[in-house]
Length: 293
Image (cartoon, rainbow, N blue to C red; front, top):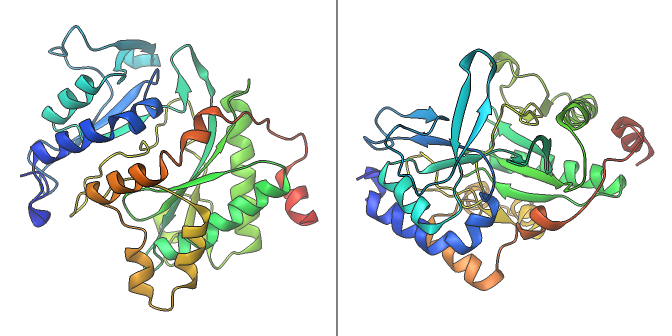
């Protein structure tokens, strides 16, 4: 019983991953994978795991990366349904892939903004900031895509899929976060310090780093219920802001496995463009574009 309050078992988690695999695996393929394991359930101890354990089956692909003083770390690369099943058996239900592919570990394929609310702010406040991120990049001629984190917030991805580096995307993302904070200091914070985040949305730009990972689209999360990090349409983000009842707005952006499977069956993979759309970072600084807009 991994999610006891929801009555959701390890078998249920594995079954979900096998059924969502066609949509999920493209977002994991060829990417070093960090896992969060919670073998005693979401109420027990959990731990992040980068290194493939010694008992990893030989048929599972691994990829070595040098991590300074840590030396070589062999990461798991999830590319088959059977790998998802094995990860579930290990209670590694939270899956966090790199923004890079193994063939170019120093080249991110997307830029990401993790919008994390500090109570009493919540996911609805994140929606407001997500739309600002979308509009800022639209002003720069770039498309962006949103998904729920499966926890408290929203994540906005700007697909690139063109030659770049973290030395370019990280400072660019930092500047975007600072612009958002400058324009809305009461609602946005760009610094990580927890004491600064009360009632505000942290625009976490630091995920744009070769050593960081972000939860995958369609990944389960270690919350009270088996919430899923779920791609959403911008209309859904805007709709949450228009709802008169706040609780209904929050619930409209919480998805469990059955919900996600129905959504994918109806709409396909809303996050597919993140893998395919080719865009380049503009030469102009984002603060200039924001002021022009």
